[in-house]
Amino acid sequence: MPRNVKITRITVHQYNWESRDLGTDYNGFNTVYSPGAKRTARGHVLAIETDAGITGEFAGGDAASYVQVGIVARYLLGKNPLERERLYNDIKRAMRKLDRMGMGPIDIALWDIAGKAYDAPICELLGGWKQTLPAYASTLHGDHVAEGGLSSPVAFADFALQCKQLGYKAYKIHGWGNDPADPKYIEREVDNVLEVRKRVGPGMDLMLDPACEYDTWADTLKVGKACDEANFFWYEDPFKDGGISAFAHKKLRELIKTPLLLGEHVRHLETRMDFTLAGGTDFVRVDSYYDGGITGALKVAHAAEALGLDVEIHAPGPAHRHLMAAIRNTNYYELGLVHPSIKTNRPPIYADGYSDDLDAVDSRGHVPVPQGPGLGVTLDWDYLRRHESGKVVYE
Ligand SMILES: [Mg+2]
Image (cartoon, rainbow, N blue to C red; front, side):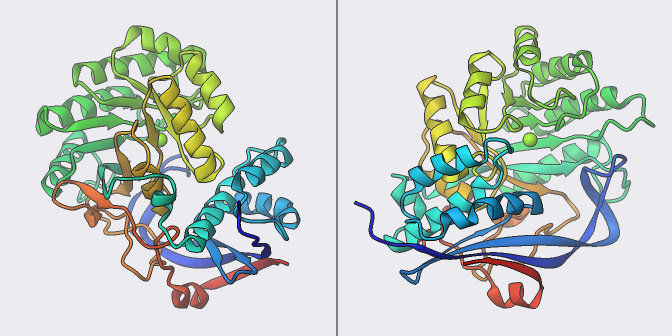
């Protein structure tokens, strides 16, 4: 029986931080290494307070998601934060005209409240048992910086070897954008796949994520055949259908043998399972922030389990460490995005040393699962207050 607790206040904190050495590539979207560049980025923390004196926190998310949080804030006030399934289903309906990206921050903050209320890490509430998780080094997109950049297949291979030395057992390439100025971009993608495999040898799992950059299905097939030749672990969201055509990827699966990982851009449980049952993917993607929080992501993991498939969690973060600690049918934690010349591309918002930077793995290439109550991380509120750029309070 849930304890009688009520949500009393919801605050969306905004802060500014300065990112260094990061810019964007030809299209203005992919983040790439850009030495000397500085830009002001905006971050968010969602805080859900209760009348039990417990506050659930989620750090992350973008401005669009917090517009959606605002839409359901009045509904949440006075509700019992421990009734996550009820809130998930009500908010899912309320956001039916939207992409529901606002559900993730809310649900994760509710799990943080639950962990703090029961004085247990979220992974324990989920029945988790893994203390550490094998990670893959997930690179930034390829750039054009000759010195210290990821500007060639040789540079990607050098960095893969560096990651291998650090302990990583797996490495994922985000290649170059489909720069219209470069007619040979597909040949370079093929060369990258073959070069990295040649240099790291057979003992490292390799993945390729073009992040929907390839113009045509035919280009996608060409690079897929290179992935076959280089025995890649998975091939993810390759082309400009945007990662949402089950039909196109079913056809692709008939012609290449490398497993596909699709679903990052297909939102939530029902749509994702329709996509999977239509034959559009081999591995099932999930992200608690994109897919209805830990509650939604767990549903996807169990639905994949019912089909005998593995679920692969997108992007790093404390919530994903707890989630992965409690899922059998999963392989790797995505650590990134990493680059040989960038020590960190994240704001220093944790006061307890929590990190998803390149050097966060142990010698076996594992990251630890936080063991404190809730998400088990401590936000640096001194830093966040000093850099505060705005705040929206619902009470
Ligand atoms: Mg991806």
